[in-house]
Amino acid sequence: EAQVTQNPRYLITVTGKKLTVTCSQNMNHEYMSWYRQDPGLGLRQIYYSMNVEVTDKGDVPEGYKVSRKEKRNFPLILESPSPNQTSLYFCASSPRTSREDEQFFGPGTRLTVL
Amino acid sequence: GESVGLHLPTLSVQEGDNSIINCAYSNSASDYFIWYKQESGKGPQFIIDIRSNMDKRQGQRVTVLLNKTVKHLSLQIAATQPGDSAVYFCAETTSGTYKYIFGTGTRLKVLA
Image (tube, rainbow over all chains, first blue to last red):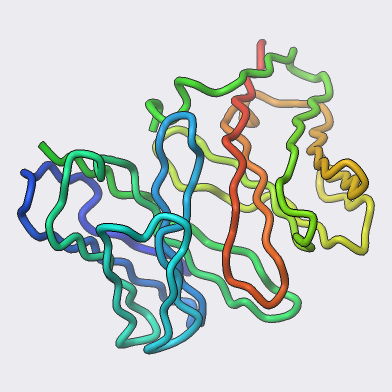
């Protein structure tokens, strides 16, 4: 089944404790992206990647890191989480060809930073 | 999940009626627009898209209208069903970039 998977789905942590949220897609998509979703603000793009070893900042990159060592994986790293990073996080992937731009989203990761 | 919908505008429609959800987009250079549906506890799901060289595009029970003059996008759902109850987002992007801007969303409630 074609899908985007995220782990963990739920995480409660404390300020300053490094964490990684994994994202994996099995559709051989070149484009992957991370978003956070907060009440009243909609989805905001954190980082995106056009291909392996190519990443760039979205609108809200502060406090986050990403890497794209393999095409299928795009982990989101919070080196020193803070309470304002409490949010619902979504990973997405897309073929990004001229005719297929649809983004496929993962199920989400709910992160709480105490 | 539910918490992201607490501050959203809500559209309530009777089952079987048509629904119209509106979105004002922000960037006049945007040339590709997408509507997503997000059910409680799930990630956004693609519904329909439209490029800026079109004014209208139809799918199964859904139609998207684009008015570039006033930077307005709408999603029409025909014969709304209980399964259409969800939060609906518009998104915009520009060819050659890889950034997406999402609207804040509208909650659609279908009344039986």
